[in-house]
Length: 195
Length: 166
Image (cartoon, each protein chain N blue to C red):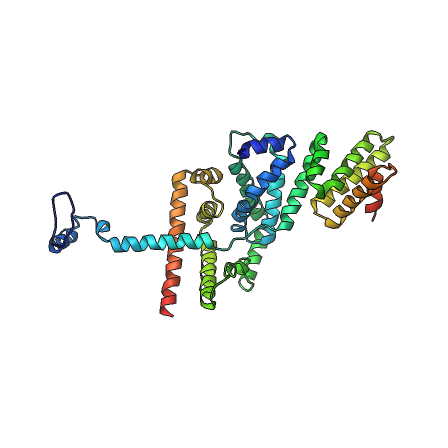
């Protein structure tokens, strides 16, 4: 099997099929990585498009010594950081509006409910909503570590490289994140038992 | 006798065990298996919930847009590969071929006005592709098909210009 790094070198030399292979492999995990951290869906799409285009623009400077995956995620992370910085005011106004509007993730909570009874479906929806909210509420660094590991299938080493911290720090962030999620789920279970 | 084997050769009664626990001489964690198992169950539950949580996903439209732009850009940067890219990415055959037709015309431009006009067309083409303008891109693709099917060999650039005139 050809490595991502070798595919990237082929793409650099004009092999578009290599780009398609890289895109098929990384597009959804990368999308999840950004979507969970971006406050708006249209910003997610903007960051994703920019990331792939910047990959194209920077392909001449790509060195196979560094992992393609961390290279790609670093571009995306930097682009998201820039965009959030540029649009702070808009973000503040959005947050006020979000208190009234439905969350971007609300429609997702209804998914994965095929072949379930109404009770199971309701319980699944509640669990999804609580988890979505709990993940969104995590401190940014813990959320990023959790999303990278759980939803983008990154190793501890890869997360450390993308976020620029030690592996021990990544482990610590993951531990805190899981503890908070456990508390949230535990609270939900106790609430359900009281009902 | 009910008890706990702490070390090889020692068996403690519940009373002796209680004494050691009160005096903080044994590790409580080793004794509280039930609690420990409960914790593990909770971890499993979270892991299962995270594994099954509905995920945000890229749309086919976004995917197509990104692939279109990458194909177009790659064909611009690698003129020797453009025919190959058209063959592997037919959705962008029109814009890619039109770009290279313009490039060919630029080489033959007779004056600065003509050159400026051709460069303007290139800039417009980049805008159309970057914006993912499906209607315009389809017009280019249709113009390319017409060109391939035409018996008379007019230049593709001219055919595309006629089709996208707005």
